[in-house]
Figure 1 (cartoon, rainbow, N blue to C red):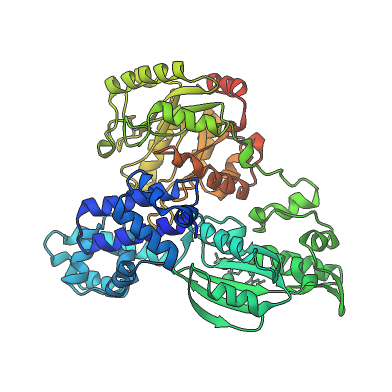
Figure 2: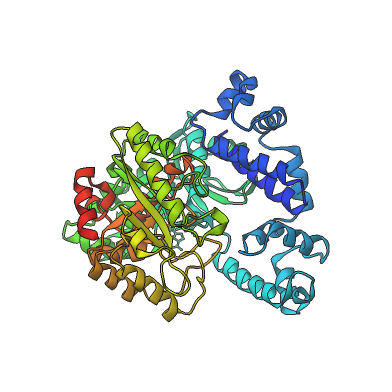
Length: 573
Ligand code: DGT
Ligand code: CA
Ligand code: CA
């Protein structure tokens, strides 16, 4: 069992217990355990199998948690978790995804008002029942109605990071079967879309039944929903569903193409086939009844006079025009990244010191980082005022003396206030090496007002870059209502960079706008926004998003060597 699945179960346990009103210390213990486990390079399962007593040497893992971990590894779940899941419906847990609705309110709605589903909640809000409750009021009613609207638009989609971890684990295990010859992910997960509706997995096998039996028995699988001779649909413990398809060897490439999608991309491929007197389906490319190709994707593309197109850009946006001219972008890869320019430390809401972050980044082979803690407006995160910030920069200089081979920039993540001014005076910002301007508050302002705030920041010569531009949280909160045309134009005119925030909940700016930014020549920086050393690992998700936007190494500023990047710093100010 993968660490990420064990961590997910602890998170779920904490959510459920929180709704039950459990002791906050216990909840924190479970959540810390989840964080420790998911950030651990060693396999928990290996530890359990070799020497479970070692579990208690992990930070924050005591006797009780160690026992729970052993139970999860041995039985795939926890009796306590199963019991709670029977008491508290999944919809009630989803209510926690409405921003502004915490576990206390959810608990009240569930036990006092007997609200058991999102439909119940909607009805209660619409009938004014919510507004009447003490501690709720008209404002909460509004928040709930808006939140429900967004949840229903998000559907049951799951963020890529969570979906991919489960897909990878299943593929890893199935690939070990003798009866499996080839295996691949497909669908939106393979295209690295920011959220995934369901997982799709393709195999070639001489023993389809054996593969399907193995999937049914997999520790992540909760239930078989449907099963035929060559396909099976299962529901995972997390609620996510997965389609498995067993296809013939000679059709593998054609099937992979078909089930990777997107639908739009496939429509163009079928049209190209027809133009050539051919027919394309999931079994292959045919002339009359004769199979022309289908074994690999490359073969099928080639028969249609196209080079192989990377899954991330199969959206019928620009890929066919580029492929026709043999100008497909050479998409950026994780190994191209040489710096990370957005991260937090214990000075505000991070969990590691400046030095620990620098060493973590150095271990990734980076040549430079920027320490960008919060500014004072973010009181919740203990944001820095001018005096503390200057002291923090001194501490950065000291840390720099202790570590060689990596440049630490003196940065700040500075809030753009509701009135459009910066949270710190220009004279302070001008002393920074790197200023990320961001919106955290007033995200619901009307377009004109919020756009003006961003334009002010873009035009400010002290601002290097705009961080997580829209402020969206995927599946949870829509971004601000922005006029992207104006913002991108201003960024290009004033030489202000734009961030792709790599956090799996943000991925902001998104693929569409990153593609526009590329056209306009705006340098993009992919940053993790890490709040811990393990947080530096999410860079990969920013890379996926950048690839979906068609970005190459050249379009992304933090692929430059420190020497090259330094020049960019000077000209951008
Ligand atoms: P999702 O699951 O909503 O995140 O998105 P996908 O793209 O994974 O969609 P899914 O799981 O419904 O189907 C997987 C792929 O199979 C899809 O990308 C294209 C192909 N496919 C499915 N249904 C159709 C269809 O009716 N027509 C065509 N042309 N392709 C289809
Ligand atoms: Ca899918
Ligand atoms: Ca599917």
